[in-house]
Length: 73
Image (cartoon, rainbow, N blue to C red; front, side, top):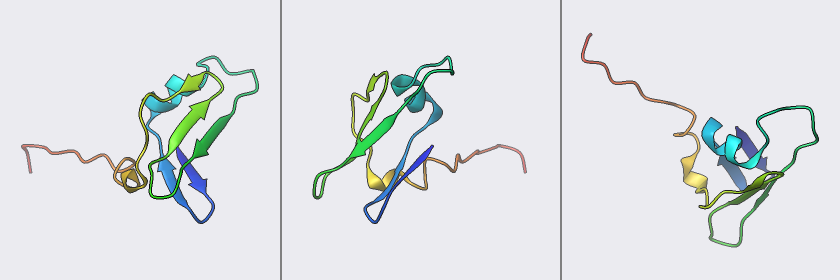
């Protein structure tokens, strides 16, 4: 999931991170908030809790492009 924070940057979340802050069963109103102080990383909160760690602005786009290394050509 990409959270575009106006002119500030983009916070990229993996599926596992989204599951930590939102309910797994849809049907209820859910929310996500992103905050970042000057020269700091993003703090991510959701309706089911807060990530224990912060997300760096440099994690995008690397987080959305999963590299697969194969031994075959």
